Image 1 (tube, helix red, strand yellow):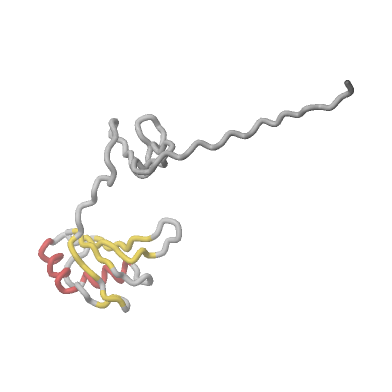
Image 2 (cartoon, rainbow, N blue to C red):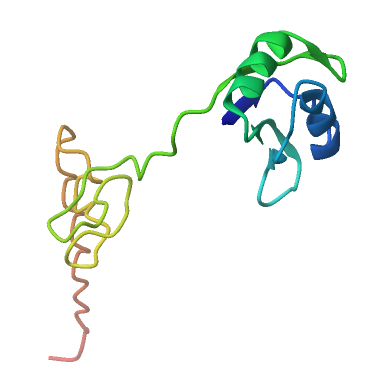
Length: 136
């Protein structure tokens, strides 16, 4: 059973999360999700428990429990979704600036928003004509 844990202290470690759940059964893995760039905790994580019954008991026992100074929220994790955007003709994502079927980002003149009016064309630079004065 995969368990979602939120409101985790930013100083908590994977080991602290595993210990909290190990008191209620066998823990296969415990992982706090971290920011890719900074490495800082994002405040949530996942615990994998192989026994469904132990997992349900752990959810009941630890919902609202204190873990390193914060009351954690615990529930069964939802399955990971396969993307959020609509699929293009070739199965590629076409929203949020991802590439469409022609390789462009699909934003065109109106920035990809069909409700937004098209941008006005930029005025052309005036031509500068130089007239030389000469002797007649």
